[in-house]
Length: 122
Image (cartoon, rainbow, N blue to C red; front, side):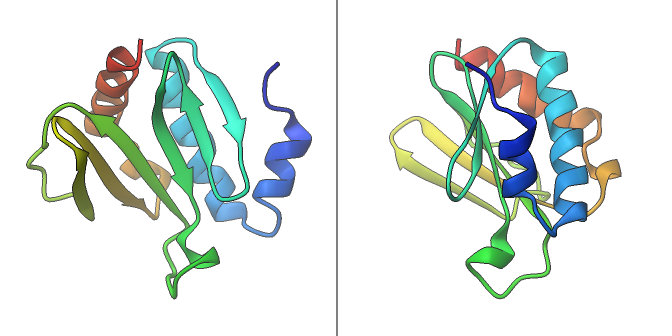
């Protein structure tokens, strides 16, 4: 069963900038290939066999004006300076956090990172 529009509407209620960024991320994920979308209390997750991308709204939990953060699971530490933070929760697994403020930031580089994460989650 897929995510319903009502679930997404509730998650992004009152946050149109966050919703617009989510739709840009979702289009990039869809271009990578099929995945499941799950709406949780704190995030929206994209999954194949395992989760590979998550988006969340930092202003709900932190003092932040960032509309959306995209977190991607990769098997390497990507050295780009665009990442807000990269953590290694377990050996050989790196979670990369990218703050998004404008849909133009979901560019070819971000789409390539999403496609890499998608492929690894197979």
